[in-house]
Length: 136
Image (cartoon, rainbow, N blue to C red; front, side, top):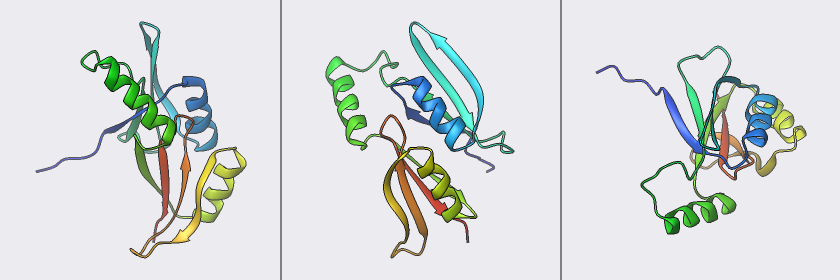
């Protein structure tokens, strides 16, 4: 079987703030920017990796969720417990400094984890956990 990860989905509640974070701070390229019905979907991804993307989606876009579920998602996003993604870089310290200088909310400075990796963590503007591991 030959399967790859093509895209992951993260919610956003402010497309301009999300663009500023993913494009301007992380350096991702914008691959798609689609608006429909007052909502906006953004597809971003690392330069040089066209087959891997993150789709930033409005959390209320699914017509199958109830108002109560929508409120729960909004609450979880505000606490930073709804979505997250793990990125990787060969130079964690340099990446950490750049992301921190861009104004991102720091959750954890670069740290050696007991499970064998060195990583750091930020929250994106929607509260999603963005962990960045150092490639070994």
